[in-house]
Image (cartoon, rainbow, N blue to C red; front, side, top):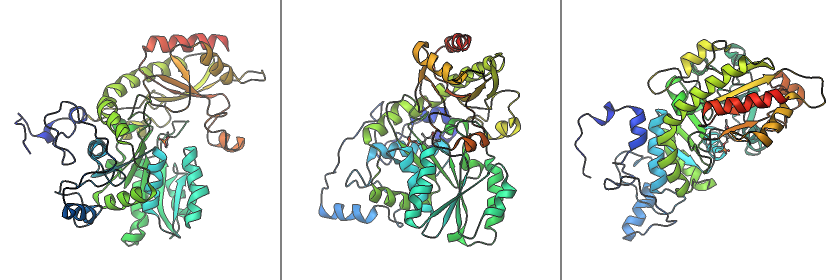
Length: 434
Ligand SMILES: *Cc1c(COP(=O)(O)O)cnc(C)c1O
């Protein structure tokens, strides 16, 4: 493989540059003569000899050959394939992990992470507020495999410690939380875990698994803060354009083979054309999008914070954010600068009417606002609005929603790339009408 001569070593360049140029010397596919990585669409691969075919099967997810050194022998798409492989190399480096395995969706990635971490009889202890499908996976499906889920308050690590049992194998949480933007202290959970692990042997060691979807690797790298495994949806900010779904698990190298075997057998592979879109459009533009979305999010948060009809705004970037110190410690960009992300939650002052002000505002926006779209999902170049109480979190009982800080007057905004003045004007007009 021919290596281009450069002024500096590759390691000396910054992450933003790596995300643009990626790993064109990838062992997954040497594409030194392409400006843009090629896309491969082939469900099966031609094997030049029986020996090569046999070798491919021996190598796949084998502990001996693991990662290091060899150029993969591709056999069948569901096992491994080069376009996905190139994306995985770049995602691993963005998250500061050794390996990444991608999946067809964020949920497929979360299922795989729990699937490889837990054995029958073991349990996951999760924070009490979770992405709805993750909660459903833990409560409806894990028990069928003999794995239990229990829930606690990860904002209180010491209380959590008392709930951990010998069967607890995984501590699982998201931060920031959806939709309230409350943060969980990753380093504090790591410290707690280290205390618990003092007397446990390797196979029983408690693992910290963090869903990094809301922050993205641009704003937060949980592995650097002590997580063992990061899971994330590529459907959101990493894909960034709302065109392709996907998910990823990033971890230390010794997880690679288990994840690959799980993916092979459960079958939730990321389609190469989706991997290519995320590799070519999504990941390289993540910093540029985030920088701008963040700036707008802060401006929108300030505007809302000063509006007489708004009771409160939760955005980690504001001066009066309750967990400001933690936000500044934990949410930093690739240069170490504070990076509070593009998601915000705000609560309107209530009215006496039958319909909440939030419902009225969301309906008004859905009908009239050019820059704000009523839709679930998040992390797109278009600003999205939703009403968690009646939409994404409607399955939870009302008292539970309230106990977890979700309010009937609460609204979630995912800030996009529109001109910030237009977003604020659309919000201003909508607030006038409710
Ligand atoms: C969307 C989302 C997921 C699931 O991702 P999919 O790609 O939709 O499967 C998981 N966790 C969080 C926090 C999410 O926002």
